[in-house]
Length: 207
Image (tube, rainbow, N blue to C red; front, side):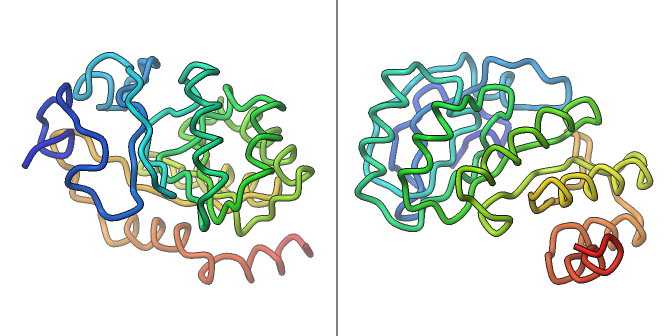
């Protein structure tokens, strides 16, 4: 047993081993150096791995891969169903070309991230482009780290919803775990379960 959840390195990671059927990693690490993220420290330098068959892409930052690697992944995924980009797609790297590549796949879910207020503009822009390419709110989820300012974070999630995405709140947990209050846990639950906020948003904004 090991991996980033156990604070151990992943340098000898073997694709397809010790994960659920269909779940794959085609890269490990991330070239970004976000202060709140454990990935660069725990997974080492960004690197590409051999691509094996699977439909759930769990890479931390697949869009940081080379064009050659991305093209090989797209080719493999053409034969897959119920495709999920659960690891996340970095909005800043999501080009019009890559959106068109995704359009040709049988995608069930894709995740972006809007972990800071400064990321909202780019994320909203890419949600609208994905919507124009034929994806719906049920395809587009957006991770939002929360636990600092409920007013700001709720406003951000409302804007994500209005742009056409589905916010997915995650309480921030550093290495020294935070014990959140019941109020914070309720807040995160509300914004991670569509049934808890969709009808309210539709009534509030007359969508």
